[in-house]
Structures are given as C-alpha cells and as structure tokens.
Length: 185
Image (cartoon, rainbow, N blue to C red; front, side, top):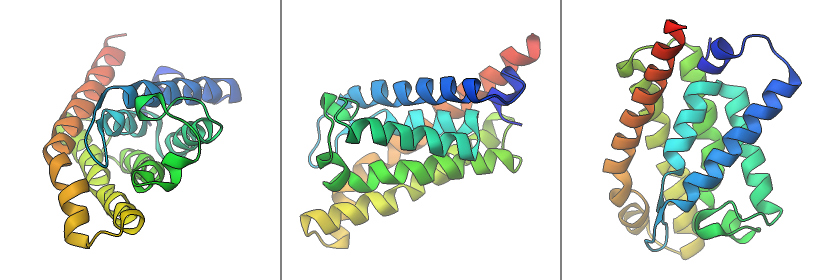
C-alpha cells in the first residue's frame, strides 16, 4: 500500500485526477527552483519525482509525470526557468525529462514491492531510480550535443551525484514522516 492509498482509501477517478494535478503542479514548482548550469540546470525535479513515486506507486506516478510532460509540450511554462513547448523535450535535457517517467514508475514499483516503510528502505527506493536517471539523461545529452560518453558524464552526471543522494535522503525522510503522521491519526 502506498502512502496516498493509506491516506485516501478507496479508488476513484476523481481522487486520481486530483493527485495527478497536485503531482504535476509539484513538478512544475520544483522545476523553478533552478541553479543555472550548462547544459543541464540543477533543479528540485528529481526530489519531486522521488516523492511522487514513493507516495503514489508505479502507475499513478508514471501517469503524473506524463501529464507534466504533456503540460509542458502544450506550451505551459512548467519546465525550468518557466519554459514550455517541445524544445526541452528534444534538447539536451530531454533524457532527464523523459527519464522522469521511468524514474517515477520504478520508484513506485519498489515501494509496491516492500520498500515502503522505514527511512532506509525508502532511501533505497528513491536512490536507485535516481541514479538510473543518469543513463537516459547523459545519453540524450551526448546525442543532442555530440559529446563523448566521458564528456556527457562530466556534464550530466558528476555535478549531480551528491545532490541525488541528498534528495533521496530528503524524500525518504518526508515519506517516512508522512507514514508517522498517518499512523498517529
């Protein structure tokens, strides 16, 4: 059982739509907390994707990220620096943006398979997909900018590794805190 299933028992389309809208809004807000770096800005999006995956489970988390990408593709200013449109989805950051879908799904899948309680388990469920995100992120960057694998790792992986660990810790602590609050109810 995921945190949102425990907090909001009963499946309904209205509940899922509300969660998707809330999650895509969280992603849009997290994209605006941006440290400009070239060619990939440092944002809080991976933290938001981890939180969504840990709280929603695999399918709802993946659909939430797809909704976010659709909002951006339609031109809504949901990507970093309040940008929208197709360019971010085919540019140097495309691998990260599309990779968020897999990251959200895998995070939720791990939670559904028993990594749903305790900071340590939640940390693993957040960190593993967060690290795997670097594969499509660096791959797309290399492809779009014509970089070697080593150059892509230097630009799109190395500067973000410590942040990935810190964000996984924060996500795990936040969701564990959510379970604690729910347990007190």
